[in-house]
Length: 319
Length: 253
Image 1: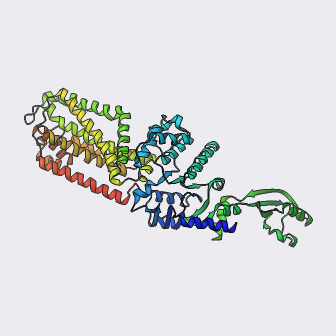
Image 2 (image 1 turned 60 degrees about the horizontal axis):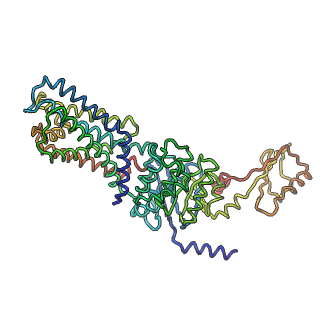
């Protein structure tokens, strides 16, 4: 198992990264430092999830790579092409699905998708454009004006616009924000197909389940800094943390010594037990028995799954 | 050159014109026809010839210029402001396309549209008054140069504007007054000497004068001066746009 992992990581080293970000900084005119010396390498064919709270710098990072925001310092290459000096070659490789539903309202789906293909210098290709529209389930609405579409459909139009010029790197900025479950699943289906075709996918999301479901690697960004880049499996172990909170009937001054092995945290009337759902046993039954033996009574109990936000807060606090 | 991208932007903008034909083409033509009826027919009957040209015919070049200027500015400013307003500008900014190519697409479409309008108005005018074009090549040159220059100005306004109000501000409160005071409906010879001097600070005077010269060989200022002033204005617009694209002003943060 260990050697397999090692050979996999060697495999990755051999391949030149499709996206290389080095010492990237962005300070806005307002003085806000949106990115602080960000270094990141993303391999070809990877699904990479960028996680972080609002205002962490996710969109700034994506917009710099795509040419919408000018970097203050540092360098970015896409497929080996510098985004400033060889912007044509670099941008030709990139598809961007922005967070906002920004599409001109009065064109038809077909027109706006063909426009995107032309904008990226690709000759019109009716068959390919049809395939893309079928993939995102918009073929039936190809002659509808954008203004008549629902939010979810507009989101799909944006995806079609980003895919129609055959990018090798696809950025999905909060692709599932405000999107219903069914569409979300359709969307991940498209993402899987793309990955199978060798497209690198970089997505930002608030939903940890999505990152968990889709991503090969995950990065956490906060206040303009990447504070963690990890294989999904490693993150999953952290995600496995669950907490059992017991609301005590009477406040406790100290945790009795016989309960020490559980490493409980006392928080006023709340006794908190953290355990790993991935572990062989959770020891919950034994803990409850021991509490009973110690004469500690509780009125109520609840369990909570540590969310991305929790992990995130932990990471930030540890720093 | 990414000509496909230029074509895509150009075609997109021209399509917008086609879609809004009532507002884009019919409205300016009706407005201009009203000018002919009021100034050319009703008032023109009481005005004697100016430098040997019937008054109705005299105002034609000025009216074409009026349309050309306002339409170039309006079309180009709206063309680039609307994507900024809706957020769709992200796509143009992230495409493998140079600022110059973006300009050709948007400004080319705006200029084409205003030239089409100018020609329609000329044809309409021919029904009302006897038209004579002494220097067709110069006439076309002035038409193209003016359309391009004011479309560039419109593009700048579209990038500068922070709301629809500002977008309307320049055409309504700057271009229209300057055109009316720029000798569209009169020769500046009729003004008192002091006002003649003031008028020379109005750039539109040079455009109207040069354009009118290409029709009737009469002008308020020498045609060479007209041409030079237009070229200067073109250069200023290009320099300003060079700065905009270099700094990313209002386009990129």
